[in-house]
Length: 248
Image (tube, rainbow, N blue to C red; front, side, top):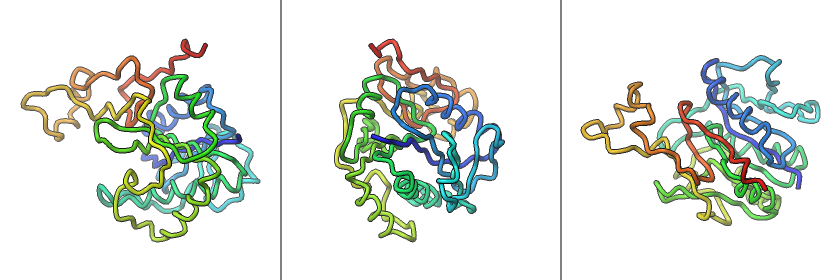
């Protein structure tokens, strides 16, 4: 099946590009996921990398004019996030992926956010082999579907497009985890938002301490389990490595 990988993006500056988005491109460059393109759908970022690194095109530009393997598709304005449950910038970028998929004639949309990392061949094989449905993983910490990694197959494209067309205002009553029409939630894969799982920090448990450099050190956070299949909301200080030795 012909597939694309995409993430949503908002690039504040050169450091943000290098530590998050370039890192994402590099990580998935040799990942054995069957996909023809890696695309960032951008919410009006103030910073864009050089065309020598990756080409950026307007969201309305015909993709038939661009054969790039890696591409940023950019909206002019930034919609951003207004509250914990109101984030029109993400919704616009996410929903635009159905337009891209239809224009490119692909059979599968693979959504992997720019801070999400797949770690094992068994999850890669699952992504490659699935041929129908709308699939997500599971966050044990929050006990809800993990929307940072999704696989949307062609039989769900009409449902996806209907969701987009029915919400032109990008105003949704709840968070995506509770609204997207998944057909399957897979709890057999181990992973979570490990950057949010803290060790006992005694009197320093408050989130206000998270921004202090010393509290970003691994000592204060639960380690990523050796048998984890994926990580979401990964931080720049965390190390991620695809377990290729298990490919046999």
